[in-house]
Amino acid sequence: MGGGGLISGVAFAIKSLRPEVKVYGVQAEGAPSMYRSLHEHKYQTLKAVSTFADGIQVKTPGELTYQICEQYVDDIVTVSEDETAAAPAGEASPPPPILSLMENQKLVAEGAGAVPVAAALFHKLPIEGKKVVCLISGGNIDVNILNRVITRGLVMSGRKANMTIALEDKPGQLKKVAEIVSRCGSNVVSVQHDGSDPNMPISSCFLKLTLETRDAEQIEQIRAELAKEGFQLVSERV
Image (cartoon, rainbow, N blue to C red; front, side, top):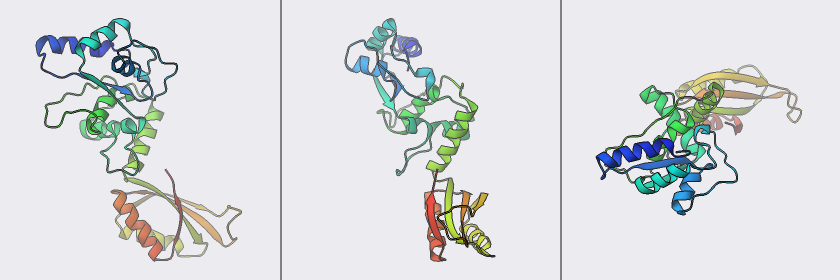
């Protein structure tokens, strides 16, 4: 939901045909104009909005659509940026909706189009055991944003990992690291050998790896195996 035009027509049609069917709206957490208006029963304008789902980045809902939503929409919830584009870190979360739609449904959805799926996946609505339709209403997403969403989604879901290892700059070190990664069943997609850091001994270097991984458990296995073999992991970065 943004200004409420699409859901007004959908809700009016559904309630006219099947009034027992529930109709829910979903807004971005950073642009909750209709959410606040309906929950506070007061038409209002937000001072500022901020969301990558620019198709629903609306400060002021429509006056007529507000009235229709009050009458026909059962409830409105909000979803965060991470819930829409990249599953929140540190949780046993489902895959991010934009990435999940691409992989499973072969659909490219913009942020505004993916928020209904986010609400369903992250249990924002009482839909367990129900027949559910998510209206995915747009695929106008910038290719650079899409690339970031995919990359971040892979990292957050444990399917891509960046590791930095402090090494002694001597023959055989890279081979040993590669053998450990291979033994754990991961794939190296990028290697950077950096010996320019002024804070490191002259005989040392940083080895920066980007890995394709299965899940967070496999990443932890690789870390543990590297530490077991005496390698020092400096950091992992998204």
